[in-house]
Image (cartoon, rainbow, N blue to C red):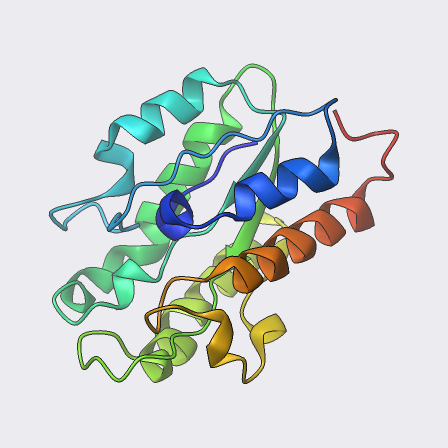
Length: 186
């Protein structure tokens, strides 16, 4: 499995590993601060974790990016969000093992920080992720609505705590199982 973005500092890859069991290896290739946009100071595709995720040769790729593209300084680059995200997705689709892929709708932002804005995330970033998933016929995993009003599952308004990590792990596990029964997951 391949992971991206805020994943680096949460525990949900470990929680997902526990849910999947020892027959699977969950890789955590998140990079804190990474963006979809290739024009920011920290595009995910320019990070070593991206290269490592490609070399991992995953059977499944679960991408959760977009929260950092919500930052006020990064919004100016969001005109190319879908194009840049398509480039990222295409990189994984071109792997020889043809991994199955899911795009994650990122968790809500429960922060009063003016640099991040849940309204912007909900009205700009999330619709672009959903539109791209529809265009590319990729399933999505909704890690946004499962949080409901549980700001207590988020430590600093952005990053999930251990309860939030469990919520994400469960929703990812359930989404994968809804597409493939457990005997097909490998």
